[in-house]
Length: 76
Image (cartoon, rainbow, N blue to C red):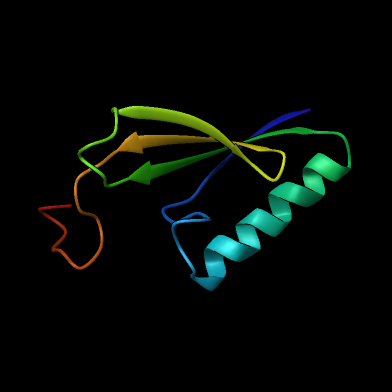
């Protein structure tokens, strides 16, 4: 089965518990034979708008996004 998991923080750039738990979930799905893609933003203006990489057997799609943390709802 192909699965897409969407989260606002993901490893290795985040050390938050939610990022770690989502990674553990994705790795378990991969271990069970599923194809997992994580969709998450990145905030580095020097990188392309879309970056695809792999982390511990999980495909990660990172797209450029403006600031989403620590700003008001209108800005977000």
